[in-house]
Length: 268
View 1: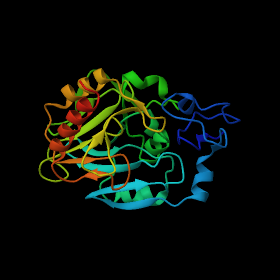
View 2: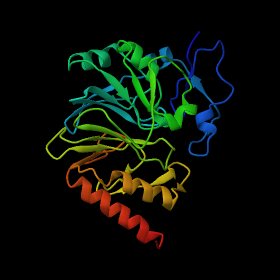
View 3: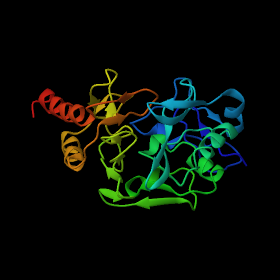
View 4: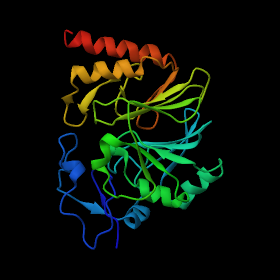
């Protein structure tokens, strides 16, 4: 039986003889059902329709689907002292993408920021030899294709190595996670925040929203808690959720200025 994927958010569901009636992720107020109604695809459908973009994104190997399918996030390979981490996932796995990852030493684990980017995470894990998938426990309910390799972590941070830490930012989702890489990919380190803090189009600031497509602001208390959890971490770069949406220098100052701008805008 196929594992159907939602055409609007890209989430892959457990195998069923027929497509699910609704996509739970898209029914949530942070997402939306496509304007043409709920539509489904299979992995084979995507393989016939799309060619993945595989290449360099500011010094890291990136893998992405064309922007017309679902949410345009891209996955990144992070060669860290915690092993080779695939940060985020997309909805299509191809032999070419797997070969590109294997040529750089393979993947030791997958870590994902929040449910909108879970996509075909189990498909990717299987293609990479069953590597573990690290997700925050607070977002367990949004795993639509359960698998033994999915591992949940708890608390506000999880140290993976001397240089790599997962930080629960919250706000967008209760378990929204950023990855901090203290000494990579360039001197000064980097933050990979998914959508918890979204890099703005000017690539000099970040924004904070509970729902980006539906323009629901994040609660000030959640933004304040996020600022406190990220306060101990320094970083030069901030890698946003999609290709090229990156702050390539003075990232810590950009994030601090964005927190200040947010609270000034709401008069807090």
